[in-house]
Image (tube, one colour):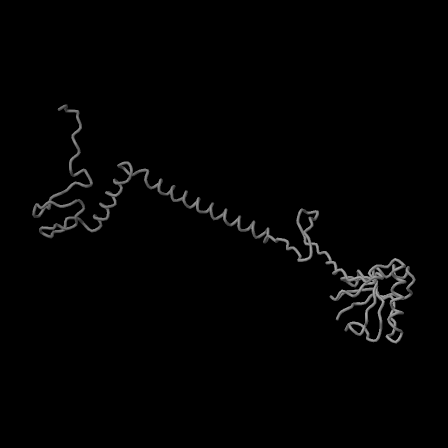
Length: 232
Protein backbone atom coordinates (compact mmCIF):
# COMPACT_ATOMS: atom_id res chain seq x y z
CA UNK A 1 0.00 0.00 0.00
CA UNK A 2 1.33 3.44 -0.91
CA UNK A 3 2.40 5.56 2.02
CA UNK A 4 0.45 8.47 0.47
CA UNK A 5 -2.80 6.50 0.35
CA UNK A 6 -5.44 7.72 2.71
CA UNK A 7 -6.36 5.44 5.53
CA UNK A 8 -10.00 4.34 5.62
CA UNK A 9 -12.17 6.26 8.00
CA UNK A 10 -12.28 4.66 11.38
CA UNK A 11 -15.50 3.27 12.72
CA UNK A 12 -15.47 5.93 15.41
CA UNK A 13 -15.58 8.65 12.73
CA UNK A 14 -18.97 7.50 11.46
CA UNK A 15 -21.95 8.91 13.34
CA UNK A 16 -23.67 5.49 13.34
CA UNK A 17 -20.63 3.46 14.53
CA UNK A 18 -21.12 1.18 17.48
CA UNK A 19 -18.98 1.46 20.61
CA UNK A 20 -18.03 -0.60 23.69
CA UNK A 21 -18.98 0.12 27.25
CA UNK A 22 -15.78 1.27 29.04
CA UNK A 23 -16.93 -0.48 32.23
CA UNK A 24 -18.07 -3.94 31.10
CA UNK A 25 -17.07 -4.06 27.43
CA UNK A 26 -20.63 -4.64 26.15
CA UNK A 27 -21.46 -3.45 22.64
CA UNK A 28 -23.51 -0.20 22.67
CA UNK A 29 -25.54 1.47 19.96
CA UNK A 30 -24.63 4.92 18.71
CA UNK A 31 -25.72 7.71 21.10
CA UNK A 32 -26.83 5.14 23.73
CA UNK A 33 -26.94 7.01 27.04
CA UNK A 34 -26.79 3.98 29.42
CA UNK A 35 -25.21 0.55 29.06
CA UNK A 36 -27.86 -2.17 28.86
CA UNK A 37 -25.55 -4.67 30.61
CA UNK A 38 -24.11 -2.81 33.58
CA UNK A 39 -26.31 0.30 33.65
CA UNK A 40 -23.42 2.72 33.64
CA UNK A 41 -23.99 6.10 31.97
CA UNK A 42 -22.16 6.37 28.67
CA UNK A 43 -22.96 9.98 27.54
CA UNK A 44 -23.25 13.27 29.32
CA UNK A 45 -26.60 15.09 29.57
CA UNK A 46 -27.50 16.73 26.24
CA UNK A 47 -25.10 14.59 24.25
CA UNK A 48 -27.90 12.29 23.09
CA UNK A 49 -29.93 15.14 21.59
CA UNK A 50 -26.84 16.58 19.94
CA UNK A 51 -25.89 13.23 18.51
CA UNK A 52 -29.33 12.52 17.14
CA UNK A 53 -29.44 15.93 15.50
CA UNK A 54 -26.08 15.24 13.92
CA UNK A 55 -27.27 11.86 12.69
CA UNK A 56 -30.44 13.34 11.22
CA UNK A 57 -28.37 15.90 9.34
CA UNK A 58 -26.51 13.08 7.64
CA UNK A 59 -29.73 11.42 6.59
CA UNK A 60 -30.75 14.48 4.53
CA UNK A 61 -29.82 14.79 0.81
CA UNK A 62 -26.08 14.99 0.39
CA UNK A 63 -24.17 13.70 3.33
CA UNK A 64 -23.35 17.08 4.77
CA UNK A 65 -27.01 18.29 4.73
CA UNK A 66 -25.84 21.76 3.69
CA UNK A 67 -28.64 22.48 1.17
CA UNK A 68 -31.62 20.71 2.76
CA UNK A 69 -32.95 23.45 5.06
CA UNK A 70 -32.85 26.24 2.46
CA UNK A 71 -34.70 23.96 0.05
CA UNK A 72 -37.36 23.13 2.66
CA UNK A 73 -37.82 26.81 3.45
CA UNK A 74 -38.12 27.65 -0.27
CA UNK A 75 -40.67 24.85 -0.73
CA UNK A 76 -42.75 26.14 2.19
CA UNK A 77 -42.69 29.67 0.72
CA UNK A 78 -43.80 28.32 -2.68
CA UNK A 79 -46.71 26.45 -1.11
CA UNK A 80 -47.83 29.56 0.79
CA UNK A 81 -47.56 31.67 -2.36
CA UNK A 82 -49.68 29.21 -4.36
CA UNK A 83 -52.31 29.11 -1.63
CA UNK A 84 -52.45 32.91 -1.50
CA UNK A 85 -52.82 33.12 -5.30
CA UNK A 86 -55.75 30.65 -5.28
CA UNK A 87 -57.51 32.53 -2.48
CA UNK A 88 -56.95 35.85 -4.22
CA UNK A 89 -58.48 34.52 -7.46
CA UNK A 90 -61.53 33.15 -5.65
CA UNK A 91 -62.06 36.47 -3.82
CA UNK A 92 -61.88 38.41 -7.09
CA UNK A 93 -64.40 36.08 -8.75
CA UNK A 94 -66.81 36.45 -5.84
CA UNK A 95 -66.44 40.24 -5.91
CA UNK A 96 -67.12 40.34 -9.66
CA UNK A 97 -70.28 38.25 -9.33
CA UNK A 98 -71.47 40.49 -6.49
CA UNK A 99 -70.95 43.65 -8.54
CA UNK A 100 -72.78 42.22 -11.53
CA UNK A 101 -75.74 41.29 -9.36
CA UNK A 102 -78.22 38.49 -9.92
CA UNK A 103 -79.34 37.69 -13.43
CA UNK A 104 -82.91 38.79 -14.06
CA UNK A 105 -84.92 36.82 -16.55
CA UNK A 106 -87.94 38.56 -18.12
CA UNK A 107 -91.30 36.99 -17.52
CA UNK A 108 -93.93 36.76 -20.17
CA UNK A 109 -97.32 38.19 -19.35
CA UNK A 110 -100.17 35.77 -19.75
CA UNK A 111 -101.79 38.05 -22.31
CA UNK A 112 -98.67 39.60 -23.83
CA UNK A 113 -95.65 39.01 -26.01
CA UNK A 114 -91.91 39.64 -25.59
CA UNK A 115 -90.42 42.66 -27.37
CA UNK A 116 -86.74 43.57 -27.74
CA UNK A 117 -85.53 46.89 -26.33
CA UNK A 118 -82.70 49.08 -27.58
CA UNK A 119 -80.28 47.71 -24.97
CA UNK A 120 -80.57 44.17 -26.25
CA UNK A 121 -82.71 42.99 -23.35
CA UNK A 122 -86.28 41.82 -23.51
CA UNK A 123 -89.29 43.22 -21.73
CA UNK A 124 -92.85 41.96 -21.39
CA UNK A 125 -95.41 43.78 -23.50
CA UNK A 126 -99.02 43.27 -22.56
CA UNK A 127 -101.76 43.35 -25.14
CA UNK A 128 -105.44 43.79 -24.50
CA UNK A 129 -107.53 40.72 -25.06
CA UNK A 130 -110.33 41.16 -27.51
CA UNK A 131 -113.77 40.63 -25.99
CA UNK A 132 -115.85 37.77 -27.30
CA UNK A 133 -117.79 38.51 -30.46
CA UNK A 134 -121.34 39.50 -29.47
CA UNK A 135 -124.39 38.01 -31.16
CA UNK A 136 -125.92 40.13 -33.94
CA UNK A 137 -129.62 40.18 -34.84
CA UNK A 138 -131.16 40.65 -38.30
CA UNK A 139 -131.02 44.43 -38.07
CA UNK A 140 -127.29 44.45 -37.25
CA UNK A 141 -127.71 45.36 -33.58
CA UNK A 142 -125.74 43.38 -31.00
CA UNK A 143 -126.48 42.10 -27.51
CA UNK A 144 -124.10 42.69 -24.63
CA UNK A 145 -121.74 39.64 -24.61
CA UNK A 146 -121.83 39.03 -20.84
CA UNK A 147 -118.33 39.64 -19.32
CA UNK A 148 -117.72 43.05 -17.69
CA UNK A 149 -116.42 45.77 -19.98
CA UNK A 150 -116.66 49.41 -20.99
CA UNK A 151 -118.89 51.00 -23.61
CA UNK A 152 -120.10 54.38 -24.92
CA UNK A 153 -123.62 55.25 -23.79
CA UNK A 154 -125.37 57.08 -26.64
CA UNK A 155 -128.80 57.44 -25.07
CA UNK A 156 -130.83 56.30 -22.04
CA UNK A 157 -134.58 55.90 -22.64
CA UNK A 158 -136.94 55.19 -19.72
CA UNK A 159 -138.64 51.82 -19.72
CA UNK A 160 -141.95 53.64 -20.05
CA UNK A 161 -140.78 54.98 -23.43
CA UNK A 162 -140.71 51.47 -24.86
CA UNK A 163 -137.99 49.31 -26.31
CA UNK A 164 -138.99 50.17 -29.86
CA UNK A 165 -137.89 53.78 -29.35
CA UNK A 166 -134.52 52.61 -28.03
CA UNK A 167 -134.00 50.29 -30.99
CA UNK A 168 -134.79 53.13 -33.37
CA UNK A 169 -132.03 55.24 -31.76
CA UNK A 170 -129.65 52.32 -32.06
CA UNK A 171 -130.38 51.89 -35.77
CA UNK A 172 -129.69 55.59 -36.31
CA UNK A 173 -126.29 55.18 -34.69
CA UNK A 174 -125.58 52.12 -36.79
CA UNK A 175 -126.50 53.95 -40.00
CA UNK A 176 -124.26 56.85 -38.92
CA UNK A 177 -121.25 54.53 -39.05
CA UNK A 178 -120.80 53.59 -35.39
CA UNK A 179 -119.84 50.00 -34.67
CA UNK A 180 -121.03 47.39 -32.18
CA UNK A 181 -124.30 49.18 -31.51
CA UNK A 182 -127.00 47.59 -29.34
CA UNK A 183 -129.65 48.03 -26.65
CA UNK A 184 -129.52 46.64 -23.12
CA UNK A 185 -131.85 46.81 -20.12
CA UNK A 186 -130.11 48.65 -17.27
CA UNK A 187 -132.02 46.74 -14.58
CA UNK A 188 -130.10 43.58 -15.53
CA UNK A 189 -126.69 45.12 -14.67
CA UNK A 190 -125.58 46.21 -11.19
CA UNK A 191 -123.26 48.93 -12.52
CA UNK A 192 -126.14 50.78 -14.26
CA UNK A 193 -129.03 52.81 -12.89
CA UNK A 194 -132.17 50.65 -13.25
CA UNK A 195 -135.28 51.62 -15.22
CA UNK A 196 -133.76 52.44 -18.63
CA UNK A 197 -133.11 51.05 -22.06
CA UNK A 198 -129.49 51.95 -22.78
CA UNK A 199 -128.33 52.49 -26.34
CA UNK A 200 -124.61 51.71 -26.48
CA UNK A 201 -121.76 51.57 -29.00
CA UNK A 202 -118.60 49.51 -28.67
CA UNK A 203 -117.25 46.92 -26.21
CA UNK A 204 -113.88 47.83 -24.66
CA UNK A 205 -111.58 46.29 -22.05
CA UNK A 206 -110.49 49.60 -20.49
CA UNK A 207 -111.94 53.01 -19.69
CA UNK A 208 -109.30 54.83 -21.72
CA UNK A 209 -110.07 52.75 -24.81
CA UNK A 210 -113.75 53.63 -24.51
CA UNK A 211 -113.08 57.36 -24.09
CA UNK A 212 -111.11 57.45 -27.34
CA UNK A 213 -114.36 56.65 -29.21
CA UNK A 214 -116.42 59.49 -27.72
CA UNK A 215 -115.47 61.98 -30.50
CA UNK A 216 -116.75 59.54 -33.12
CA UNK A 217 -120.08 59.28 -31.28
CA UNK A 218 -120.38 63.08 -31.24
CA UNK A 219 -119.68 63.25 -34.97
CA UNK A 220 -122.49 60.74 -35.47
CA UNK A 221 -124.95 63.26 -33.99
CA UNK A 222 -125.12 62.24 -30.33
CA UNK A 223 -124.76 65.30 -28.11
CA UNK A 224 -123.64 63.89 -24.76
CA UNK A 225 -122.13 60.40 -25.18
CA UNK A 226 -120.11 59.11 -22.21
CA UNK A 227 -118.17 56.01 -21.24
CA UNK A 228 -119.65 53.55 -18.75
CA UNK A 229 -118.63 50.24 -17.21
CA UNK A 230 -121.13 47.44 -17.72
CA UNK A 231 -121.03 44.59 -15.19
CA UNK A 232 -123.60 42.11 -13.93
